Amino acid sequence: MPEASVAAQLYTVRDFTKTSADIVSSLKRVSQIGYRAIQCSGLGPIDPTELKTVADGEGLEICATHVGYDRLRDETDAVVDEHRIWECDYVAIGSLPKGYREDGATGYERFAKEASGVARRLSDAGLTFGYHNHSFELERFGDRTALQILIEESDAEVFQFEIDVYWIQHGGGDPAAWLRKVNGRADVIHVKDLAMEGRDQLFAEVGEGNLNWPSILEAAREAGTRWYAVEQDRCQRDPFESLAISYRNLQEMGLS
Image (tube, rainbow, N blue to C red; front, side, top):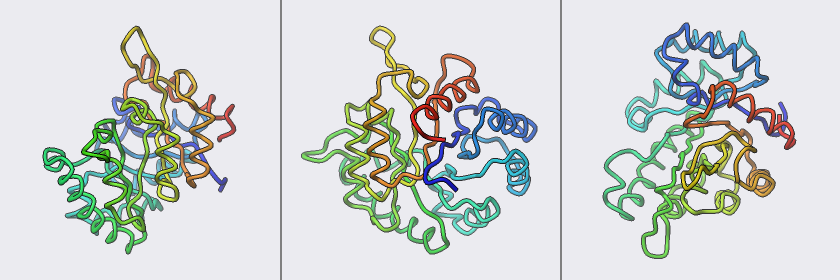
């Protein structure tokens, strides 16, 4: 396997993965773009073994997933079994679960400690836990942002961060600086761009907006990032075309 690789985050094409037949068709299209890995998120119902068979048939590695925090906590064994079927060792949650944010800094501290316990159980079973950020984690509580609290109060051995560079920029942060803050704890990151239309911020394909990609990619390499998962929450064109544009631009930046 190459040192670092590009993956398609299937949340980008969630409107085209609502049934097992949709998933089969969409994985074929993703493979035809050139992707050789996927992150599973936003999929409709499909048997785990069938998903693995379809992915293998299209030459796609399931490198990462998004799973709800409650299920990671309460159905750990089932989650582990599914990931073993997929030969996937990375699982992240898509956002902070309800019930923590309302308590401010105390809530983030509590989540960091509780989730570290879940992450430890997953680690003992061979999986790596990741936390995917949005921009609200850059809210300040005294001299620390919420994201800094999560970094400092979680167990660095088992708790990773799926840094989403768009949302860091959206929150007024420097994506490269935050990648360096999680050095060694960012096996998977989310890449998308931020463009402007008047005063409105838009999701854009990688390389089609205003993010500083040389700086971001350098910081990701320093942090030990293994997978660059292309995700676009909302597309201004066909989502598969957006995935293709991001893929081509990342190739030109030296990734594959």
